[in-house]
Length: 82
Ligand SMILES: [Zn+2]
Image (cartoon, rainbow, N blue to C red; front, side, top):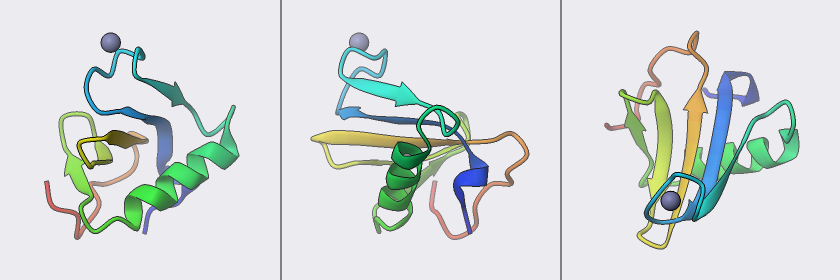
């Protein structure tokens, strides 16, 4: 079970380029409420996926992309397809 303690960084924005031109990064220290909201959104979405290269859990409905980057000490989450 992932909690806010497992979150290193979050991202939310329109689908596409993730340089920051279409969305915003943040971290749970500066934005604890936002990080929690985005974590909840991602883990409750049945379409969520895990990316091993970036060690993140993300959703992309072709309109918006939401990414939760996990801390280095967090093991790869079970039950989330890659
Ligand atoms: Zn960009």
